[in-house]
Image (cartoon, rainbow, N blue to C red):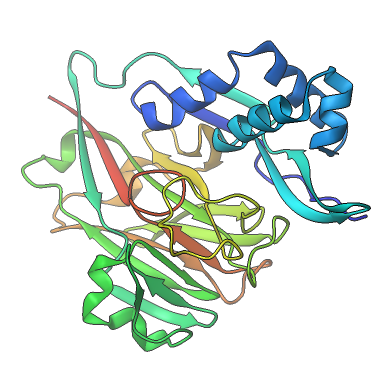
Length: 316
């Protein structure tokens, strides 16, 4: 029996300013029993019955704890055929967690948060099938048609996907003096895009700002096996369900992805001064090593109630 491959990025960094991410993880780790489950899954993938037997727990209790670990993003599961029907095979997703409990807004430094819906991109270039867009209530335009990405209803998008290509979003800094910007970060919920879904399906998702590549995240797969926390009832159980919330941050020391060093791009390299907007481009480039598509989740799909968020820290 094949087992899911481990996630490429096994560390998550949580900030006290991101309560929607930090609280579910903290709650999941507050139970010694769930911590023991994570320890068992570090050794090998196990189904719910095996976990229940190893921990001397009822299967129903084990299943509830497994679900909480899934919703926190600490483990993932996939349904596989078993001797007596289907079974849920659980695997470890994250090997380490760090929490920053100091608010980033402090004396002498202010943080600005700007949000864009995922359908508010200004350009969709080189989009290839499989591709599509859905709102909270229905499909938008034609399935597997790149021209759908310029459909007038795209601004209502709550999930979109494509095999390769790039989207460009533009943020305004408003009245902020670019010379005072100390750091800037972008966060969004993403995954690969496989037929139906596939937990092990790597894809190189690239992000650039103002034409400067920040670096690539290798998405480990397209996640299903359970419904996304926010997905509407009409969305199929056999389709992609949720992604991972990823954060690219650039400051005066370089660029980090979820707190881990990613590249040497610094805030001064982004050349914010004299610009009318900040350009964010994300996608899967045709020449990438892993061209496994991209799923982008909005406020009403997936696990995280947000679109694309830009946060800027600047001297007051």
